Image 1 (cartoon, rainbow, N blue to C red):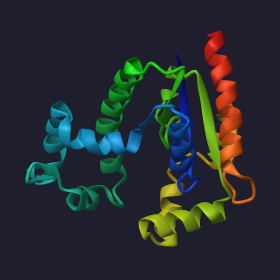
Image 2: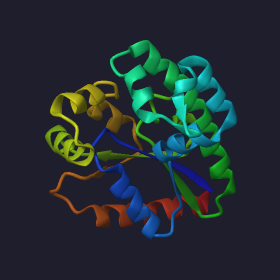
Image 3: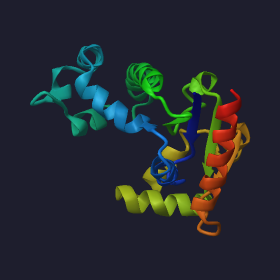
Length: 197
């Protein structure tokens, strides 16, 4: 089975592309959703978060998101610390999930495949590309964020042109080219590659 990464900058439309692959019967692991789940369910991770961020990190046995946000927002060291706890747990969970899949290929959808160094555990990586202005609009609309907040988050990711050059395949989600035919074509390619592996 081929292990495929799916990445792109904030607002590029990774999740939209991932849903099309799911309709084609391909299982998708969503790293962000998994990270949120693991912060509540992974005992080791919970203990580490409490150890570093205090007992206020959890309320009614659930992660207190506003409290955590107040701790890491505008604090680079604390944000890096939180990421250093959450990323390894998510990577372990993703690898375990991959081993359970039986399809010709499976996809791991994550914004920070290259930033977290997980590209080496994947056979191919698909990038989802969209112009910065469009990504800004999408992210502001989706999250109710300000332009400045989105730009701050974008600045923490590898610049899109560099990220796309690192990918094996690129899907353009620029409102000019239809996404579904691009996904269908890539699906056929990946099915062929999986058969020859």
